[in-house]
Length: 382
Image (cartoon, rainbow, N blue to C red):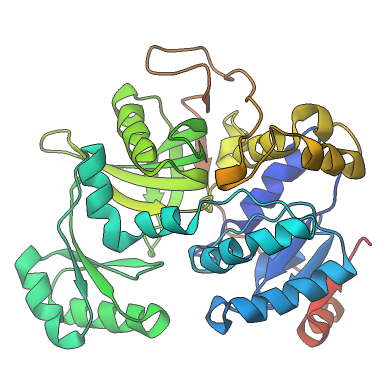
């Protein structure tokens, strides 16, 4: 629910679901801190619960979810942060028995796309990968950077990337990132070229159900997309398909790719196992990916029914499963005309659309803030 210079995906996911014409349910937001600004955005969440930070472990999360589910019904959970995914995947069999659906990768898939294994993914997909060194101590920091050559990106194992042009910036960035994410700290070669960001839904069999591809036009100081334009590129699509096929990815994914200026070669930079913060752009460009997730888990007919009818139908449907046991229902036809690089199975965004992020102030009541801070929960619409 963070809506700051380095925003989380939660707000964008909720906005997409709110825009889905068949959605009639309620939105329950999970937050780690009562000061996460999107909590207080009018019309966003009907209820909000604080949950323990991922560092507290799976058992703490399980206990908190037990309490939350005793207070309110939840049909579908959409984890949206890298650091929390492992716990939700571990809890998914138990949550499924409690009536909660999720569309997530397996633990093996999650590990395969981690930053320390991306070189293996690229080798299988025959895609370029920048030279990357994992550093587990500050003593090896300078040697690693000199081996790659300055400037070099300094990355956390989960989040954050800072460009270091010299030793002083290297040490400052590494210590800052280590303080939040620990070791290993990753050092990565700088690839100069056009940056592309792709949000998609994998079907768990190597296929792509829906995809929004954009070229980054503006970046924040945290190297986050602050503006972009949807594009259509057969070469980019081919590269992304190879990556997703290699992983047989199930669920949301963000793929960050750079096309090197010198020779046009594609380099995979990151694979993030969730929707990106700019996911609302998928709705604005004609391919509502969170909405597509609802269609495939519940089915379009069920989405137009009441929440109770929809969930019961989804549970009883033999074609509605999750991860290894899941096969989503067939997607709707693509929203854009078919091209030779496309298949009838994948839905695409309309090229030539643009987004720009804007920062604004949210005014909220101290009563709401105090209720969430003290009780750990906030009910607007019961």
